[in-house]
Length: 214
Length: 350
Image 1 (tube, rainbow over the protein chains, first blue to last red):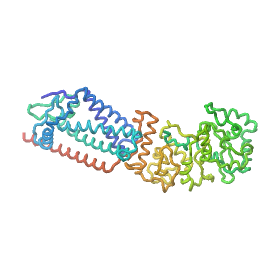
Image 2: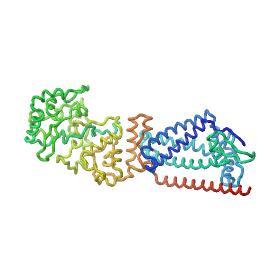
Image 3: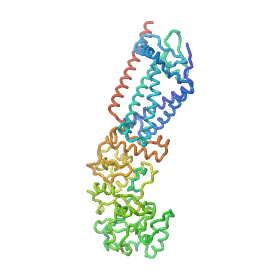
Protein backbone atom coordinates (compact mmCIF):
# COMPACT_ATOMS: atom_id res chain seq x y z
CA UNK A 1 0.00 0.00 0.00
CA UNK A 2 1.51 3.30 -1.08
CA UNK A 3 0.13 6.69 -0.27
CA UNK A 4 0.99 9.92 -1.94
CA UNK A 5 -0.54 13.31 -1.10
CA UNK A 6 -0.94 14.52 -4.66
CA UNK A 7 -3.68 17.13 -4.70
CA UNK A 8 -3.59 20.02 -2.20
CA UNK A 9 -6.89 21.51 -1.02
CA UNK A 10 -6.78 24.54 -3.30
CA UNK A 11 -6.26 22.33 -6.33
CA UNK A 12 -9.14 20.01 -5.45
CA UNK A 13 -11.46 22.95 -4.80
CA UNK A 14 -10.43 24.49 -8.09
CA UNK A 15 -10.93 21.18 -9.91
CA UNK A 16 -14.43 20.61 -8.61
CA UNK A 17 -15.47 24.21 -9.11
CA UNK A 18 -14.17 23.95 -12.64
CA UNK A 19 -16.13 20.73 -13.12
CA UNK A 20 -19.30 22.37 -11.85
CA UNK A 21 -18.88 25.37 -14.16
CA UNK A 22 -18.09 23.06 -17.04
CA UNK A 23 -21.23 21.08 -16.47
CA UNK A 24 -23.35 24.23 -16.14
CA UNK A 25 -21.88 25.72 -19.32
CA UNK A 26 -22.31 22.51 -21.23
CA UNK A 27 -25.91 21.97 -20.19
CA UNK A 28 -26.97 25.60 -20.73
CA UNK A 29 -24.95 25.83 -23.95
CA UNK A 30 -26.55 22.72 -25.41
CA UNK A 31 -29.99 23.90 -24.36
CA UNK A 32 -29.45 27.33 -25.99
CA UNK A 33 -27.77 26.01 -29.10
CA UNK A 34 -30.38 23.40 -29.91
CA UNK A 35 -33.23 25.41 -28.34
CA UNK A 36 -34.06 22.62 -25.90
CA UNK A 37 -36.46 24.50 -23.67
CA UNK A 38 -37.34 21.30 -21.83
CA UNK A 39 -33.72 20.88 -20.73
CA UNK A 40 -33.26 24.38 -19.36
CA UNK A 41 -35.67 27.22 -20.17
CA UNK A 42 -34.08 29.75 -22.51
CA UNK A 43 -34.38 32.71 -20.15
CA UNK A 44 -32.66 30.71 -17.39
CA UNK A 45 -30.01 29.23 -19.67
CA UNK A 46 -28.75 32.56 -21.04
CA UNK A 47 -27.87 34.33 -17.75
CA UNK A 48 -26.60 31.06 -16.25
CA UNK A 49 -24.31 30.57 -19.22
CA UNK A 50 -23.08 34.17 -18.95
CA UNK A 51 -22.39 33.97 -15.21
CA UNK A 52 -20.73 30.55 -15.47
CA UNK A 53 -18.55 31.81 -18.30
CA UNK A 54 -17.36 34.76 -16.22
CA UNK A 55 -16.67 32.50 -13.25
CA UNK A 56 -14.84 30.04 -15.49
CA UNK A 57 -12.64 32.92 -16.63
CA UNK A 58 -11.79 33.70 -13.01
CA UNK A 59 -11.26 30.01 -12.34
CA UNK A 60 -8.88 29.77 -15.27
CA UNK A 61 -6.92 32.78 -14.01
CA UNK A 62 -6.77 31.10 -10.58
CA UNK A 63 -5.37 28.01 -12.32
CA UNK A 64 -2.65 30.15 -13.90
CA UNK A 65 -1.80 31.75 -10.55
CA UNK A 66 -1.80 28.33 -8.86
CA UNK A 67 0.57 27.01 -11.48
CA UNK A 68 2.98 29.88 -11.08
CA UNK A 69 2.81 30.42 -7.31
CA UNK A 70 1.58 27.04 -6.09
CA UNK A 71 4.18 25.13 -8.08
CA UNK A 72 1.56 23.06 -9.89
CA UNK A 73 2.95 24.32 -13.19
CA UNK A 74 5.75 21.79 -13.24
CA UNK A 75 3.26 19.06 -14.13
CA UNK A 76 2.52 20.81 -17.39
CA UNK A 77 6.09 21.00 -18.62
CA UNK A 78 6.57 18.77 -21.63
CA UNK A 79 9.82 16.84 -21.80
CA UNK A 80 10.34 16.85 -25.54
CA UNK A 81 13.34 14.55 -25.33
CA UNK A 82 11.41 11.64 -23.84
CA UNK A 83 7.99 12.56 -25.23
CA UNK A 84 7.91 10.38 -28.36
CA UNK A 85 8.80 7.15 -26.53
CA UNK A 86 6.60 8.00 -23.54
CA UNK A 87 3.68 8.58 -25.89
CA UNK A 88 4.25 5.32 -27.72
CA UNK A 89 4.44 3.42 -24.43
CA UNK A 90 1.31 5.15 -23.08
CA UNK A 91 -0.75 4.56 -26.21
CA UNK A 92 0.43 0.96 -26.42
CA UNK A 93 -0.68 0.47 -22.83
CA UNK A 94 -4.18 1.89 -23.46
CA UNK A 95 -4.78 -0.09 -26.64
CA UNK A 96 -3.12 -3.36 -25.59
CA UNK A 97 -1.36 -3.57 -22.24
CA UNK A 98 -4.37 -2.60 -20.15
CA UNK A 99 -6.22 -5.70 -21.45
CA UNK A 100 -3.45 -8.15 -20.67
CA UNK A 101 -2.64 -6.81 -17.23
CA UNK A 102 0.66 -5.28 -18.17
CA UNK A 103 2.17 -2.97 -15.55
CA UNK A 104 1.38 0.70 -16.11
CA UNK A 105 4.24 2.33 -18.01
CA UNK A 106 3.99 5.51 -15.95
CA UNK A 107 4.43 5.85 -12.21
CA UNK A 108 2.76 8.70 -10.38
CA UNK A 109 5.11 10.68 -8.19
CA UNK A 110 5.07 14.03 -6.45
CA UNK A 111 7.07 15.45 -9.33
CA UNK A 112 5.14 13.79 -12.15
CA UNK A 113 1.45 13.23 -11.63
CA UNK A 114 0.58 13.26 -15.34
CA UNK A 115 1.67 10.75 -17.93
CA UNK A 116 2.90 11.94 -21.32
CA UNK A 117 -0.50 11.62 -22.98
CA UNK A 118 -2.17 13.50 -20.14
CA UNK A 119 0.47 16.21 -20.12
CA UNK A 120 0.01 16.77 -23.81
CA UNK A 121 -3.80 16.84 -23.68
CA UNK A 122 -3.99 19.00 -20.54
CA UNK A 123 -1.53 21.50 -21.94
CA UNK A 124 -3.61 21.60 -25.12
CA UNK A 125 -6.86 22.01 -23.19
CA UNK A 126 -5.78 24.38 -20.44
CA UNK A 127 -3.40 26.55 -22.44
CA UNK A 128 -5.02 26.22 -25.87
CA UNK A 129 -8.72 25.35 -25.98
CA UNK A 130 -9.71 26.97 -22.71
CA UNK A 131 -8.33 30.48 -23.29
CA UNK A 132 -9.70 30.46 -26.84
CA UNK A 133 -13.10 29.30 -25.66
CA UNK A 134 -13.12 31.96 -22.96
CA UNK A 135 -11.98 34.61 -25.43
CA UNK A 136 -14.69 33.70 -27.92
CA UNK A 137 -17.26 33.78 -25.11
CA UNK A 138 -16.24 37.30 -24.12
CA UNK A 139 -16.23 38.30 -27.77
CA UNK A 140 -19.88 37.22 -27.87
CA UNK A 141 -20.71 39.34 -24.86
CA UNK A 142 -18.96 42.40 -26.24
CA UNK A 143 -19.57 41.89 -29.93
CA UNK A 144 -20.71 45.49 -30.31
CA UNK A 145 -17.08 46.48 -29.80
CA UNK A 146 -15.76 44.05 -32.42
CA UNK A 147 -14.96 45.18 -35.94
CA UNK A 148 -17.76 44.49 -38.38
CA UNK A 149 -15.76 41.82 -40.16
CA UNK A 150 -12.93 39.47 -39.22
CA UNK A 151 -10.94 37.93 -42.07
CA UNK A 152 -13.49 39.34 -44.47
CA UNK A 153 -16.37 37.49 -42.81
CA UNK A 154 -18.94 38.88 -40.39
CA UNK A 155 -17.33 39.00 -36.92
CA UNK A 156 -20.22 37.44 -35.10
CA UNK A 157 -20.28 34.47 -37.39
CA UNK A 158 -16.54 33.92 -36.92
CA UNK A 159 -16.91 34.20 -33.14
CA UNK A 160 -19.98 31.95 -33.10
CA UNK A 161 -18.33 29.24 -35.16
CA UNK A 162 -15.12 29.38 -33.12
CA UNK A 163 -17.11 29.11 -29.90
CA UNK A 164 -19.12 26.21 -31.28
CA UNK A 165 -16.10 24.31 -32.59
CA UNK A 166 -14.15 24.80 -29.35
CA UNK A 167 -17.17 23.73 -27.32
CA UNK A 168 -17.43 20.48 -29.29
CA UNK A 169 -13.72 19.84 -28.75
CA UNK A 170 -14.13 20.51 -25.05
CA UNK A 171 -17.02 18.05 -24.91
CA UNK A 172 -14.78 15.48 -26.57
CA UNK A 173 -12.13 16.15 -23.94
CA UNK A 174 -14.68 15.70 -21.14
CA UNK A 175 -15.78 12.32 -22.52
CA UNK A 176 -12.20 11.09 -22.64
CA UNK A 177 -11.36 12.66 -19.27
CA UNK A 178 -14.31 10.98 -17.55
CA UNK A 179 -13.28 7.62 -18.93
CA UNK A 180 -9.57 7.94 -18.22
CA UNK A 181 -10.45 8.58 -14.57
CA UNK A 182 -11.55 4.95 -14.39
CA UNK A 183 -8.24 3.57 -15.68
CA UNK A 184 -6.45 3.76 -12.34
CA UNK A 185 -5.48 0.70 -10.36
CA UNK A 186 -9.16 0.26 -9.61
CA UNK A 187 -11.88 2.19 -11.46
CA UNK A 188 -12.25 4.57 -8.49
CA UNK A 189 -8.61 5.08 -7.49
CA UNK A 190 -8.23 8.34 -9.36
CA UNK A 191 -11.65 9.67 -8.40
CA UNK A 192 -10.92 9.05 -4.73
CA UNK A 193 -7.57 10.78 -5.10
CA UNK A 194 -9.19 13.92 -6.44
CA UNK A 195 -11.65 13.87 -3.53
CA UNK A 196 -9.28 13.11 -0.64
CA UNK A 197 -6.04 14.41 -2.11
CA UNK A 198 -4.33 11.07 -1.41
CA UNK A 199 -3.30 8.83 -4.26
CA UNK A 200 -3.56 5.38 -2.72
CA UNK A 201 -2.40 2.20 -4.38
CA UNK A 202 -2.70 -1.18 -2.82
CA UNK A 203 -0.07 -3.71 -2.64
CA UNK A 204 2.60 -5.12 -4.74
CA UNK A 205 5.73 -3.19 -5.47
CA UNK A 206 5.88 -4.17 -9.13
CA UNK A 207 2.16 -3.72 -9.74
CA UNK A 208 0.79 -1.25 -12.24
CA UNK A 209 0.77 2.18 -10.78
CA UNK A 210 -2.20 4.17 -11.92
CA UNK A 211 -2.38 7.35 -13.84
CA UNK A 212 -3.14 10.55 -12.08
CA UNK A 213 -6.28 12.31 -13.15
CA UNK A 214 -5.30 15.91 -12.43
CA UNK B 1 -25.48 56.28 -29.80
CA UNK B 2 -29.15 57.03 -29.96
CA UNK B 3 -30.04 53.37 -29.86
CA UNK B 4 -33.32 52.20 -31.18
CA UNK B 5 -34.87 55.41 -30.04
CA UNK B 6 -35.26 56.49 -33.60
CA UNK B 7 -36.03 60.09 -34.17
CA UNK B 8 -39.54 59.30 -35.19
CA UNK B 9 -40.50 56.98 -32.41
CA UNK B 10 -42.45 58.29 -29.52
CA UNK B 11 -42.96 57.48 -25.92
CA UNK B 12 -46.23 59.17 -25.17
CA UNK B 13 -49.72 57.76 -25.34
CA UNK B 14 -51.49 56.95 -28.56
CA UNK B 15 -51.50 59.88 -30.92
CA UNK B 16 -54.64 61.88 -31.29
CA UNK B 17 -55.99 61.01 -34.71
CA UNK B 18 -54.62 63.55 -37.13
CA UNK B 19 -53.47 65.78 -34.36
CA UNK B 20 -51.60 68.66 -35.83
CA UNK B 21 -52.92 68.22 -39.34
CA UNK B 22 -56.61 68.62 -39.05
CA UNK B 23 -58.74 67.71 -42.00
CA UNK B 24 -61.10 70.31 -43.46
CA UNK B 25 -63.14 71.83 -40.70
CA UNK B 26 -66.65 72.70 -41.78
CA UNK B 27 -68.22 75.61 -40.01
CA UNK B 28 -70.92 73.28 -38.78
CA UNK B 29 -68.34 71.26 -36.94
CA UNK B 30 -66.84 74.33 -35.37
CA UNK B 31 -70.20 75.32 -34.08
CA UNK B 32 -70.38 71.89 -32.50
CA UNK B 33 -67.04 72.45 -30.84
CA UNK B 34 -68.35 75.65 -29.40
CA UNK B 35 -71.35 73.83 -28.08
CA UNK B 36 -69.20 71.16 -26.49
CA UNK B 37 -67.15 73.85 -24.81
CA UNK B 38 -70.17 75.54 -23.41
CA UNK B 39 -71.57 72.33 -22.08
CA UNK B 40 -68.30 71.39 -20.51
CA UNK B 41 -67.48 74.53 -18.61
CA UNK B 42 -70.70 76.43 -18.44
CA UNK B 43 -69.36 79.87 -19.14
CA UNK B 44 -66.56 80.93 -21.47
CA UNK B 45 -65.29 83.23 -18.72
CA UNK B 46 -64.53 80.23 -16.52
CA UNK B 47 -61.97 79.07 -19.09
CA UNK B 48 -60.02 82.25 -18.68
CA UNK B 49 -60.10 81.83 -14.94
CA UNK B 50 -58.88 78.28 -15.15
CA UNK B 51 -56.22 79.03 -17.68
CA UNK B 52 -53.23 80.25 -15.67
CA UNK B 53 -53.45 77.20 -13.49
CA UNK B 54 -53.59 74.85 -16.44
CA UNK B 55 -50.60 76.11 -18.35
CA UNK B 56 -48.24 76.82 -15.50
CA UNK B 57 -44.76 76.24 -16.92
CA UNK B 58 -42.75 73.30 -15.66
CA UNK B 59 -39.87 75.55 -14.91
CA UNK B 60 -37.49 73.95 -17.36
CA UNK B 61 -34.67 76.08 -18.68
CA UNK B 62 -36.07 76.75 -22.15
CA UNK B 63 -39.54 77.56 -20.86
CA UNK B 64 -42.63 75.89 -22.18
CA UNK B 65 -43.76 76.78 -25.65
CA UNK B 66 -47.26 76.77 -24.24
CA UNK B 67 -46.54 79.99 -22.38
CA UNK B 68 -44.81 81.71 -25.28
CA UNK B 69 -46.35 84.11 -27.72
CA UNK B 70 -50.06 83.62 -28.16
CA UNK B 71 -49.96 80.03 -26.98
CA UNK B 72 -51.84 80.82 -23.80
CA UNK B 73 -54.66 82.09 -26.00
CA UNK B 74 -54.73 78.78 -27.90
CA UNK B 75 -54.62 76.75 -24.74
CA UNK B 76 -57.65 78.56 -23.39
CA UNK B 77 -59.60 76.08 -25.45
CA UNK B 78 -57.22 73.35 -26.54
CA UNK B 79 -56.24 72.18 -23.07
CA UNK B 80 -59.62 70.58 -22.66
CA UNK B 81 -59.72 66.82 -23.08
CA UNK B 82 -63.13 67.01 -24.70
CA UNK B 83 -61.96 69.39 -27.39
CA UNK B 84 -63.08 67.41 -30.39
CA UNK B 85 -65.56 67.24 -33.20
CA UNK B 86 -66.99 64.59 -35.41
CA UNK B 87 -65.91 64.98 -38.98
CA UNK B 88 -69.00 65.17 -41.10
CA UNK B 89 -67.46 63.24 -43.96
CA UNK B 90 -65.59 60.43 -42.26
CA UNK B 91 -67.82 60.29 -39.16
CA UNK B 92 -64.64 59.97 -37.07
CA UNK B 93 -63.99 61.95 -33.90
CA UNK B 94 -61.18 64.41 -34.49
CA UNK B 95 -59.38 65.18 -31.26
CA UNK B 96 -58.20 68.77 -31.00
CA UNK B 97 -57.07 68.70 -27.38
CA UNK B 98 -53.45 69.19 -26.40
CA UNK B 99 -52.18 67.13 -23.49
CA UNK B 100 -50.19 69.84 -21.72
CA UNK B 101 -48.05 67.39 -19.78
CA UNK B 102 -47.20 65.28 -22.82
CA UNK B 103 -46.43 68.40 -24.83
CA UNK B 104 -44.05 69.77 -22.25
CA UNK B 105 -42.17 66.49 -22.25
CA UNK B 106 -42.11 66.29 -26.02
CA UNK B 107 -39.23 67.16 -28.29
CA UNK B 108 -41.20 70.20 -29.48
CA UNK B 109 -41.84 71.46 -25.96
CA UNK B 110 -40.25 74.88 -26.42
CA UNK B 111 -42.15 75.73 -29.59
CA UNK B 112 -45.03 78.14 -29.31
CA UNK B 113 -48.20 77.02 -31.10
CA UNK B 114 -47.82 79.74 -33.71
CA UNK B 115 -44.36 78.55 -34.73
CA UNK B 116 -46.01 75.69 -36.59
CA UNK B 117 -49.60 76.83 -36.87
CA UNK B 118 -48.68 80.15 -38.40
CA UNK B 119 -51.64 81.21 -40.44
CA UNK B 120 -55.23 82.04 -39.79
CA UNK B 121 -55.71 81.06 -36.18
CA UNK B 122 -55.97 84.59 -34.85
CA UNK B 123 -59.73 84.64 -35.09
CA UNK B 124 -62.23 82.38 -33.50
CA UNK B 125 -63.93 80.37 -34.83
CA UNK B 126 -60.91 79.55 -36.98
CA UNK B 127 -61.45 79.80 -40.70
CA UNK B 128 -61.94 76.54 -42.51
CA UNK B 129 -58.95 77.28 -44.71
CA UNK B 130 -56.62 77.50 -41.74
CA UNK B 131 -57.10 73.83 -41.07
CA UNK B 132 -55.94 73.09 -44.59
CA UNK B 133 -52.52 74.47 -43.88
CA UNK B 134 -50.98 71.14 -44.84
CA UNK B 135 -48.35 70.97 -42.14
CA UNK B 136 -45.81 68.24 -42.58
CA UNK B 137 -42.89 67.16 -40.42
CA UNK B 138 -40.48 67.29 -43.32
CA UNK B 139 -41.58 70.74 -44.49
CA UNK B 140 -41.40 72.30 -41.07
CA UNK B 141 -38.02 70.75 -40.29
CA UNK B 142 -36.66 71.93 -43.63
CA UNK B 143 -38.02 75.40 -43.11
CA UNK B 144 -36.20 75.73 -39.80
CA UNK B 145 -32.92 74.10 -40.88
CA UNK B 146 -31.16 77.47 -40.93
CA UNK B 147 -32.43 78.65 -37.55
CA UNK B 148 -29.67 79.17 -35.06
CA UNK B 149 -31.64 78.40 -31.91
CA UNK B 150 -33.34 75.24 -33.19
CA UNK B 151 -31.68 72.74 -35.46
CA UNK B 152 -34.30 70.12 -36.22
CA UNK B 153 -33.02 66.85 -37.70
CA UNK B 154 -33.27 66.73 -41.47
CA UNK B 155 -36.10 64.37 -42.32
CA UNK B 156 -35.70 64.46 -46.09
CA UNK B 157 -34.18 60.96 -46.15
CA UNK B 158 -37.08 59.56 -44.18
CA UNK B 159 -39.45 61.23 -46.61
CA UNK B 160 -37.86 59.51 -49.60
CA UNK B 161 -38.09 56.16 -47.82
CA UNK B 162 -41.64 56.88 -46.75
CA UNK B 163 -42.69 57.68 -50.32
CA UNK B 164 -41.77 54.09 -51.24
CA UNK B 165 -43.44 52.57 -48.21
CA UNK B 166 -46.59 50.53 -48.17
CA UNK B 167 -48.08 53.30 -46.05
CA UNK B 168 -47.62 55.93 -48.75
CA UNK B 169 -48.55 53.61 -51.61
CA UNK B 170 -51.39 51.52 -50.30
CA UNK B 171 -52.53 52.47 -46.82
CA UNK B 172 -56.13 53.48 -46.31
CA UNK B 173 -56.52 54.52 -42.68
CA UNK B 174 -59.90 53.87 -41.13
CA UNK B 175 -60.25 57.54 -40.35
CA UNK B 176 -60.52 58.19 -44.06
CA UNK B 177 -57.82 60.86 -43.85
CA UNK B 178 -54.79 60.52 -46.06
CA UNK B 179 -51.80 58.74 -44.52
CA UNK B 180 -49.17 61.13 -43.22
CA UNK B 181 -46.44 61.37 -40.59
CA UNK B 182 -49.16 62.21 -38.10
CA UNK B 183 -50.87 58.87 -38.65
CA UNK B 184 -48.11 57.35 -36.53
CA UNK B 185 -46.28 60.22 -34.87
CA UNK B 186 -48.03 62.77 -32.73
CA UNK B 187 -45.97 65.96 -32.90
CA UNK B 188 -47.58 67.19 -29.67
CA UNK B 189 -46.21 64.29 -27.63
CA UNK B 190 -43.38 62.89 -29.75
CA UNK B 191 -40.00 62.49 -28.16
CA UNK B 192 -37.12 60.11 -28.85
CA UNK B 193 -36.80 57.46 -26.19
CA UNK B 194 -34.07 58.24 -23.67
CA UNK B 195 -30.81 56.35 -24.22
CA UNK B 196 -31.16 54.45 -20.97
CA UNK B 197 -34.47 52.88 -21.96
CA UNK B 198 -34.17 49.11 -21.55
CA UNK B 199 -34.26 47.18 -24.82
CA UNK B 200 -37.58 45.44 -24.15
CA UNK B 201 -39.19 48.85 -23.53
CA UNK B 202 -37.69 50.27 -26.73
CA UNK B 203 -39.06 47.29 -28.62
CA UNK B 204 -42.44 47.63 -26.92
CA UNK B 205 -42.68 51.37 -27.63
CA UNK B 206 -41.66 50.89 -31.27
CA UNK B 207 -44.08 48.07 -31.83
CA UNK B 208 -46.93 49.79 -30.04
CA UNK B 209 -46.65 52.46 -32.72
CA UNK B 210 -47.58 49.84 -35.30
CA UNK B 211 -50.10 47.98 -33.16
CA UNK B 212 -52.04 51.17 -32.40
CA UNK B 213 -53.39 51.05 -35.93
CA UNK B 214 -52.89 47.39 -36.79
CA UNK B 215 -55.39 46.23 -34.22
CA UNK B 216 -56.18 43.21 -36.39
CA UNK B 217 -52.89 41.77 -35.13
CA UNK B 218 -54.21 41.58 -31.61
CA UNK B 219 -55.33 37.98 -32.07
CA UNK B 220 -54.05 34.57 -31.00
CA UNK B 221 -53.07 33.89 -34.58
CA UNK B 222 -52.30 37.34 -35.96
CA UNK B 223 -53.38 37.94 -39.53
CA UNK B 224 -50.55 37.54 -42.03
CA UNK B 225 -48.26 36.14 -39.34
CA UNK B 226 -49.65 32.61 -39.33
CA UNK B 227 -46.23 31.32 -40.42
CA UNK B 228 -44.46 32.94 -37.47
CA UNK B 229 -44.02 30.70 -34.41
CA UNK B 230 -44.70 32.41 -31.07
CA UNK B 231 -45.63 35.79 -32.53
CA UNK B 232 -45.92 37.47 -29.14
CA UNK B 233 -42.46 36.34 -28.09
CA UNK B 234 -41.07 37.69 -31.34
CA UNK B 235 -42.84 41.01 -30.94
CA UNK B 236 -41.48 41.34 -27.43
CA UNK B 237 -37.93 40.79 -28.65
CA UNK B 238 -37.64 42.49 -32.03
CA UNK B 239 -39.17 45.49 -33.67
CA UNK B 240 -41.79 45.06 -36.39
CA UNK B 241 -39.54 47.12 -38.66
CA UNK B 242 -36.69 44.64 -38.27
CA UNK B 243 -38.59 42.42 -40.70
CA UNK B 244 -40.75 45.04 -42.40
CA UNK B 245 -38.02 47.26 -43.89
CA UNK B 246 -35.62 46.44 -46.74
CA UNK B 247 -32.33 44.78 -45.87
CA UNK B 248 -30.29 47.01 -48.15
CA UNK B 249 -28.90 50.26 -46.91
CA UNK B 250 -30.01 49.82 -43.34
CA UNK B 251 -28.83 52.22 -40.73
CA UNK B 252 -29.08 50.69 -37.32
CA UNK B 253 -29.96 53.86 -35.49
CA UNK B 254 -32.14 55.56 -38.07
CA UNK B 255 -34.60 52.85 -39.01
CA UNK B 256 -35.91 52.98 -42.51
CA UNK B 257 -39.34 54.47 -43.06
CA UNK B 258 -39.79 52.33 -46.15
CA UNK B 259 -42.21 49.99 -44.45
CA UNK B 260 -42.81 46.89 -46.53
CA UNK B 261 -46.02 45.02 -47.08
CA UNK B 262 -46.40 41.32 -46.33
CA UNK B 263 -45.12 40.15 -49.71
CA UNK B 264 -41.80 41.98 -49.54
CA UNK B 265 -41.12 41.53 -45.82
CA UNK B 266 -38.71 38.99 -44.41
CA UNK B 267 -40.46 35.68 -43.82
CA UNK B 268 -37.30 33.65 -43.75
CA UNK B 269 -36.54 32.31 -40.27
CA UNK B 270 -32.87 31.77 -41.07
CA UNK B 271 -32.30 35.45 -41.85
CA UNK B 272 -32.16 35.83 -38.08
CA UNK B 273 -31.82 32.30 -36.78
CA UNK B 274 -28.71 31.05 -38.54
CA UNK B 275 -25.06 31.72 -38.92
CA UNK B 276 -25.23 33.51 -42.23
CA UNK B 277 -28.39 35.48 -41.58
CA UNK B 278 -28.33 38.98 -42.92
CA UNK B 279 -30.33 40.28 -40.02
CA UNK B 280 -28.40 38.42 -37.38
CA UNK B 281 -25.38 40.68 -37.07
CA UNK B 282 -27.53 43.75 -36.92
CA UNK B 283 -29.85 42.40 -34.28
CA UNK B 284 -27.14 40.88 -32.15
CA UNK B 285 -24.75 43.82 -32.24
CA UNK B 286 -27.60 46.16 -31.71
CA UNK B 287 -29.00 44.41 -28.68
CA UNK B 288 -25.60 43.81 -27.15
CA UNK B 289 -24.61 47.43 -27.67
CA UNK B 290 -27.84 48.74 -26.25
CA UNK B 291 -27.54 46.67 -23.13
CA UNK B 292 -23.92 47.53 -22.64
CA UNK B 293 -24.77 51.23 -22.73
CA UNK B 294 -27.46 50.80 -20.18
CA UNK B 295 -25.91 48.46 -17.70
CA UNK B 296 -22.18 48.93 -17.61
CA UNK B 297 -19.47 46.36 -18.13
CA UNK B 298 -20.09 43.54 -15.68
CA UNK B 299 -23.85 43.81 -15.54
CA UNK B 300 -23.87 43.75 -19.30
CA UNK B 301 -21.87 40.54 -19.33
CA UNK B 302 -24.09 38.87 -16.75
CA UNK B 303 -27.47 40.01 -18.01
CA UNK B 304 -26.58 39.96 -21.68
CA UNK B 305 -29.60 38.39 -23.32
CA UNK B 306 -28.78 39.30 -26.87
CA UNK B 307 -28.28 35.64 -27.83
CA UNK B 308 -30.63 34.68 -30.62
CA UNK B 309 -31.56 31.03 -30.84
CA UNK B 310 -29.80 29.50 -33.80
CA UNK B 311 -27.16 32.19 -34.19
CA UNK B 312 -24.36 29.72 -33.50
CA UNK B 313 -26.00 26.96 -35.50
CA UNK B 314 -23.83 25.26 -38.08
CA UNK B 315 -25.27 21.94 -39.25
CA UNK B 316 -21.86 20.87 -40.57
CA UNK B 317 -19.96 21.50 -37.34
CA UNK B 318 -22.81 19.99 -35.34
CA UNK B 319 -22.88 16.85 -37.47
CA UNK B 320 -19.12 16.40 -37.30
CA UNK B 321 -19.08 17.16 -33.57
CA UNK B 322 -21.90 14.73 -32.88
CA UNK B 323 -20.24 12.02 -34.97
CA UNK B 324 -16.83 12.43 -33.33
CA UNK B 325 -18.19 12.61 -29.79
CA UNK B 326 -20.55 9.72 -30.52
CA UNK B 327 -17.73 7.56 -31.86
CA UNK B 328 -15.60 8.49 -28.87
CA UNK B 329 -18.35 7.44 -26.47
CA UNK B 330 -18.72 4.14 -28.35
CA UNK B 331 -14.95 3.75 -28.34
CA UNK B 332 -14.48 4.26 -24.61
CA UNK B 333 -17.53 2.09 -23.89
CA UNK B 334 -16.00 -0.72 -25.97
CA UNK B 335 -12.68 -0.14 -24.21
CA UNK B 336 -14.41 -0.41 -20.85
CA UNK B 337 -16.16 -3.62 -21.82
CA UNK B 338 -12.83 -5.03 -23.03
CA UNK B 339 -11.21 -4.15 -19.70
CA UNK B 340 -14.05 -5.76 -17.80
CA UNK B 341 -13.79 -8.98 -19.83
CA UNK B 342 -10.02 -9.04 -19.38
CA UNK B 343 -10.50 -8.53 -15.66
CA UNK B 344 -13.01 -11.40 -15.50
CA UNK B 345 -10.72 -13.69 -17.46
CA UNK B 346 -7.82 -12.86 -15.15
CA UNK B 347 -9.89 -13.66 -12.04
CA UNK B 348 -11.15 -16.89 -13.57
CA UNK B 349 -7.62 -18.01 -14.32
CA UNK B 350 -6.43 -17.33 -10.77
